[in-house]
Length: 200
Image 1 (cartoon, rainbow, N blue to C red):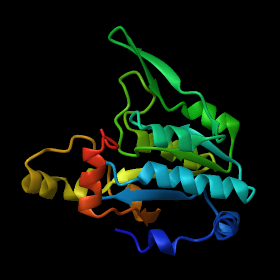
Image 2: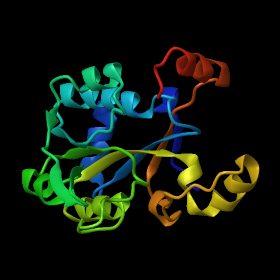
Image 3: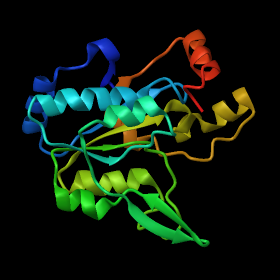
């Protein structure tokens, strides 16, 4: 995996992050990784993004997937949101990350949720991680989210363990050089969030 895995309480400060990206020779990918949907990856990413903005970094929301969760929507707050690209598919208008708009905006950091997402047919790239690679190549740092079961290397193991084939995957190489931040939640707490309707 990566030697850059950090626990939630072991993260660097916004000031340390700024110093790291200023020293880096190329844009950095940071991924909030969780064992399941609903553990709080997107919320934590947004929470930390406010700290980064408060420290003086230029942060935009390239694509945030709230899944209708009011707390997550509210946590976007006053962060700048880059409008999504609208794509017609089978008579329905769908929204995807607008890679060109993010690059044109040129922030220091773009928040781009759900790294393993498969884009709607008609998009420039088939997968969101490919969109992210374009944005990184343009010199923009990206912070994203990922459930661990979406890694290609453990896809077969996950299918055997839970009897479900995970269809949205990404190559392990995408995460090898990224900073990984572990977002964890006890199973009982996740069950309670499910029962309370906080996770759909």
